[in-house]
Image 1 (cartoon, rainbow, N blue to C red):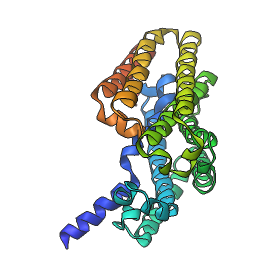
Image 2: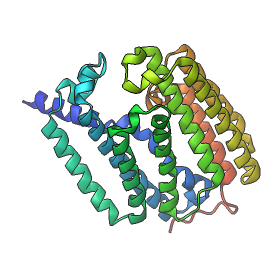
Image 3: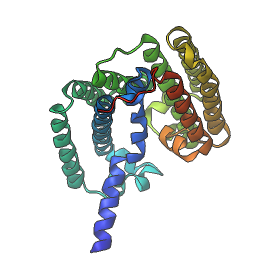
Image 4: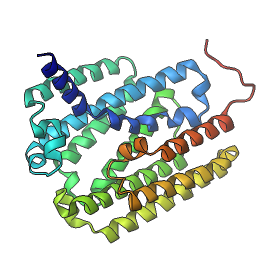
Length: 294
């Protein structure tokens, strides 16, 4: 009985895909670049935004898995790894978990109401993506990328700070790069059997998309730091190394199908992100070095 309960709990947690919550670090970008990370109240507001975005992302994953049960059951890997498709979690359990998350999101409206508007747009976009847009080539990748942009905007709204046009374009390009590599790896690993939209892609095409978007991310990030945050120009080599490393993992280690798994499983990428974060904090630390925590 205890083992069954533990197994069910583990499967329900798996349904939430907590590993994917790492994507929500994008919510913290405005906190970093605005220099508000030394203010406790700003940090708390940003953390609330991250928490509710994690809930929203899990809700989207549940909806997507529920809608794709039949197709996932025919998939050679998803039929064994997805809790709903494998039967480890029942439809009723999934609906109950989703209802619990919805209650949490409703509570979130009374804590960070403006952020919840962005989150509502994110959920709506992903529902339309699940129902229609995920089967339309190019649009599918852009939908995924817009989700990352909305994360950045949610972080900005939480702090009542503007989003730089450079940050907007850089985030979009970086997300397009990650999405293009994801499609590339799906084609390499599963062929056109992986998902319907892969019939409209080829390795040559997605390689071009990934190349263009990675160059765009680097170009616009460099323009951003040169025009608005000149003290951060030393972070550009770190970004270049991160892009190089991700490409290496995709090409020679067959990673990249899941950006979150790729990041969390490679110590060099982890150190790159931490190193970039350290450089940014040092460069953006407000003058005076005084904490405003009270």
